[in-house]
Image (cartoon, rainbow, N blue to C red):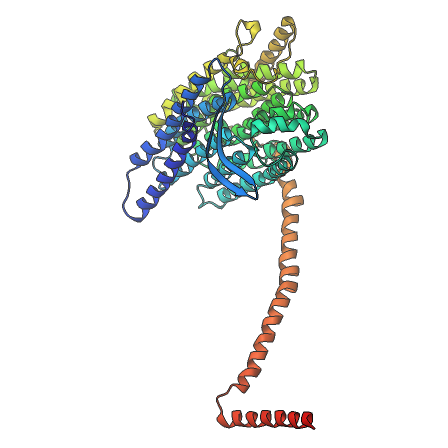
Length: 628
């Protein structure tokens, strides 16, 4: 196979994006281009990239071949050469397949969701650029090229979150996401600089890094691993850099689906998995990662139980599920974490797109307690959302059951019983808040019968059906041995440390039963409280959970306002009273000098003659004195 096709997995959506951008400018400046043109170009790119990725997947079956392609020399400074390189191994190709497939379905959905938007072409310009950036991130052969894609998804998230820029709150949400991610990115940059210093600049790719890390002092490795995880925390919205994720719901719903299901937020989990050779050497840092993931999962689940905005409930559920993923990769279960990334892509995309369909039908209403009775009004959306809810809750045989069970098994078999306990408690809360959403939105009664629903287009419905099928069957690639299966994800990534430590089958059955019981308990409590809920009763939430533990207020008081105070001090005290005083003082001096000289340069001939006479007299007097 020609390895240059690796570059085309990224280039196809990138070139599509650039073409869409130029076409959009032409459309608004010269002549209107029909939306169908933008649709065909925008929707074709993810599926073309998928087909190329699938061809590499077929080549890898049954072997451990790694495909490398150096496109060109990107930068050469003082003997430090950086190549624009691409690497396809089993991890990156696995990521490429569901990023492009699920991303393609979201593109189809977006074509219906955004069809009346005046910036339709611009939206797909951003959308394809977002996809290209994520593909570059996972196919990069080195941390530096990965960082380009890393920053690409960051800036695209800013464009898309603040897409409705006429509303100030949306722009603020985009700014919040951008700034929070830049804080995390500083850790990534520091880690790269440290790696370059200790490992060397040439051959700075993953293959050489893996060999070079063996000679680096353990304290330095700990520092590098910790700094990298700071970057992962920012991108994957874990404690303490999670505050941007709920506000990111300001963008169009297809953006939420793409960010949460197939791109941006999974990048942090991918980073830890990609650097598995580093974290295997520093299990103490891995344990910290697992605990951060566990507490983030629980924290987000608690907040989700009191939210009323349908998209924000799903946003906190994403943060919680990402916490599960970090539990797995932190404890060395890299393939287990990636398995949950895979199943999560299907049911989380389905949840957001189903929520978006309801939002469109109800003329962009997002408060779940102003919905109700949607089961009979939108039956296909209801059944799709039911499947996705069963999947995220962990009810067998839906996709989330298998991957979540593997994560909790990894925690228990690693001896981290506190993490396991937090995971089980989080599973109860997940079932509760997700079925609360489902029961209120679709089973709530006494809703306004007379309200006229907006039509949901077929392009929005068809992807739901495909994703619903995926949410049912995606977990079957990871059926555990005790159920007569074979974890194909673990087998596919068999060159990694096997993280699912072996336990007795009897104990594994007990643990599996506990996980199912946790999901049933949460579901039952939600059923008792919210099934056939009377929508005339609007709950009045208040208190610390409703206020999201006041984290935003704390950040605003102790960080944002302090930064503003320092900025104002620098601006007014240092800039105005010191720097400006010097600059303006010098300028005033020059002005005064100019005024004085202007009195001499007055074009008066007698005045000039007088000064010439004075000058000659002074010079003559000086010469006579000297000669004497």
